[in-house]
Amino acid sequence: MIKVGRTAAWTAALFGGLLGAPARGAITVLNNSFESPTVTLAQVASPFVDNWVTDGPTKLDVGGGILINTNTGIFPNTPAASPDHIDNVDGNQAAYIGAQTGNEFTQVLSTN
Image (cartoon, rainbow, N blue to C red; front, side, top):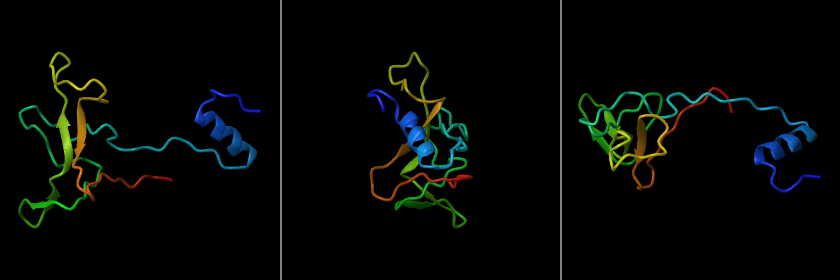
């Protein structure tokens, strides 16, 4: 009998064990908090994000045939005392993504 209030992970582990499903471990997500490359407050934002593919429908040719999506990227969080500081950011930077259909962050993970 499963009591109300148990976590979804506990429930999944219980049923997975009962059904003979394989145990799952942690999956590494590189640059998971969008800290690289470092973007300064003076830069405002950057469309370049290490370890992530930032595809989308709005591309800008930055020269040499290099196209970047202008609707996805990263920006620095302001200092904690600043009125526009975002409290729930994991690290010093955050990602932005435009609402237009097709904008995305993707990454090929080491396992599924």
